[in-house]
Image 1 (cartoon, rainbow, N blue to C red):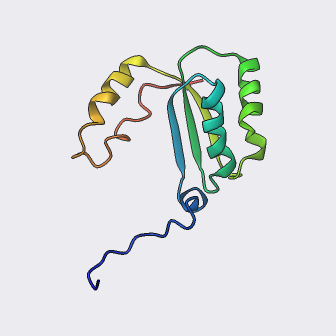
Image 2 (image 1 turned 90 degrees about the horizontal axis):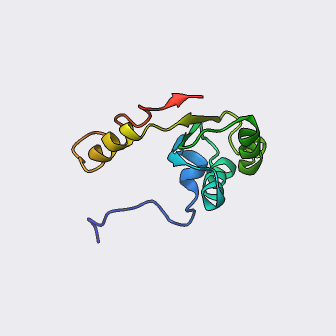
Length: 121
């Protein structure tokens, strides 16, 4: 038992949300149903969140954005410093992104060009 590895306790499974999670990116986001529930979970629980990005597939207007702000409960966010960006998704960048996710020799196969191909709205 002397050489046994010690792992972080699972007594508090939300420790990552409380202390570590700073960036969330939803690469493809339609803003409906369980997708909104999933995103809202991070909005309301990630206490050190700095940035959350939503890759939008469809066009949207100010009314849609206001509705999303309400559904996601951005006013009640856990991190007062969090910034939320809705960006238009580029299908060509998604194809390139998928190629890299299997190359685990890269330092960060998911983040190498993660936000490339987005257009700020």
